[in-house]
Image 1 (tube, rainbow, N blue to C red):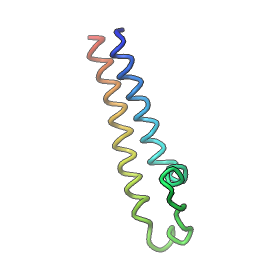
Image 2 (cartoon, rainbow, N blue to C red):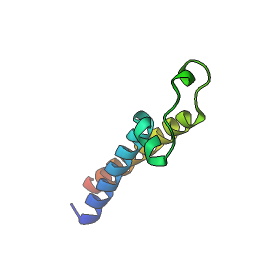
Image 3 (cartoon, rainbow, N blue to C red):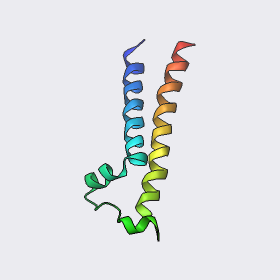
Length: 78
């Protein structure tokens, strides 16, 4: 495989890991942004809008990374 395919695959893996952390490990991402953790009362009353933003954007970034790396590899292998 050429080097550019490996570089793009690594970039796709990095995007997938970043997206997974944004979607499913929100406490760590909030600390990186300098935001406090979501209050426990928000679970029962009104959820924090940042929770939904991180969840949606994280899944989108994760899927983009998987598709980018996968399609590049599959197109090169054909």
